[in-house]
Length: 292
Image (cartoon, rainbow, N blue to C red; front, top):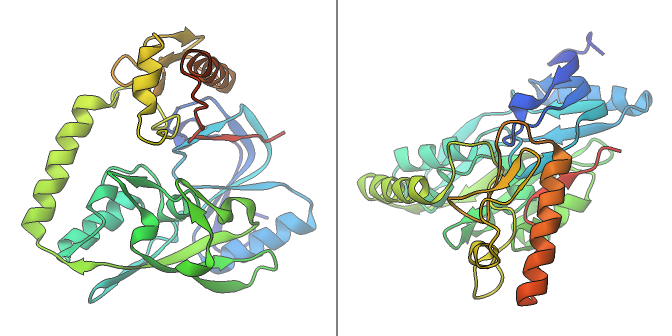
């Protein structure tokens, strides 16, 4: 596998700094993909040798277990961005913040909400990421994916079933390679002011000083998950090294020693108590990655 061009392979690799919860985790193989050909060739190799694989974005919004007996793949090299008038086409490895910054630099508006999203474009499309009542499908035109036969195919936005924080891509054996967005002409100074205002608001309301993976639960219709969790008296609740944030109740933070089981058990406790007290069935926004 190490002879395949366009990839870098590390064996028995730590994933602690590749997930935003900073959970201790290892993979039998960690593969940094630099080119599309490298991705296709390594996927062929893994399939032929019956090695499981998982595509890792920025490691946000996920809860991973301690060991993966397979290959974790990260699209490090797929980070090209091209701006053509009011359209931006970028590869899946681009961070959402970089995409938003590029749009602002070109006096385009529509992606300011994404400046602090700690995910890649590919992962954000799969999970229909969003903030401030906007989501990535608002500006999306089309994507390119690598399908199960390792062929590149293009899909228009209208061909992709998507709902709040979910798309059918989660159930497909496809890998997002590229996305094209259609934006509007804007004003750089106005966009920067909006971004700064939201940055101040984010610092004031979110526990940015501790490892987390963003909002744990989706907001119920006409309500907020954080309000319900706080009203249930769960702020500061701990299981092992996992704690419901004192700053924002819809965040679980790693106090330093949290395991994936600590976080999952705390999620179950919060869900159960909110259901018992308010008869609200909170829906998990974070994704539990079951490698077993």
